[in-house]
Image (cartoon, rainbow, N blue to C red):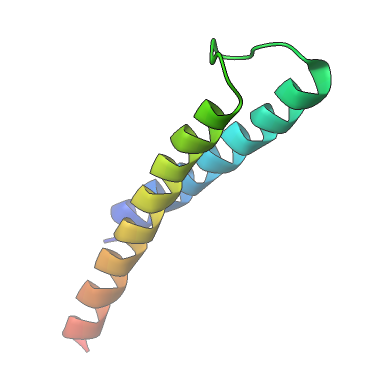
Length: 67
């Protein structure tokens, strides 16, 4: 379960980095990572955040069953 917890934190970090890249892209006025529209950054970040939530729920449920 510790590996899933680490994967969840890494996924959250990637999502946060993508949101920061979106902010930089808005300020700079240039496309970063090849996304044509800024909303695509938030779609990608949303996927990583949903993965993070799902992994944390799985880890939490499995730890509750052990106690």
